[in-house]
Amino acid sequence: MPLPHPDDLTSLVLRTDFGDEGAWDAVRAALDAAGEYPHATYVSDLRFAGVDVQALLDEEAAAEEDDQIVYMFLADATTMDDPGHPVLAVDLSDEPGRTFRVPVQWFPDVAANLSIANMDFADFADAADGSGTFRGFDGADSSR
Image (cartoon, rainbow, N blue to C red; front, top):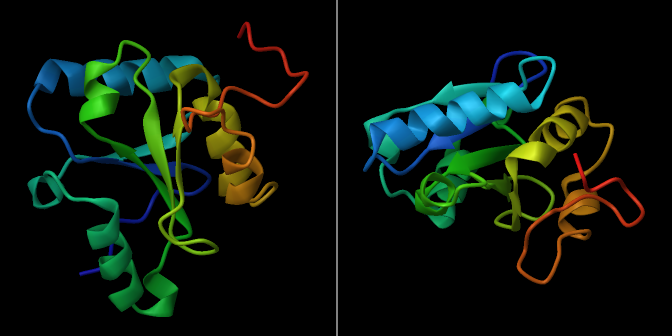
């Protein structure tokens, strides 16, 4: 079964941690509040409970080419537990399995640029810090 598809000009945010419904609500509210426009298509489907990146890559690789997506964001246990709700960005195309974390305040920028293919996944992943978290580009205003 192919992975869910995001709505036009949004990014897929796939829930993989189902331990706390309130945390999921908080993640969605924080992501929605971070930008002026909707940037996310949220999927909360128990078939993805605890799924890892490799399983998602395998599922995506088995899908028909027209059903494949290029990247996605996971709302995993780290996303739910961390007050900054950093989602995990996952490359499904250019470097399958490459990941980096995206704190809420950077989600609209990353999601918008990836959804319109203005920037590549690697542009953001290469700018991630030592912890694997994207916190803006050098010289960018990180106070947002």
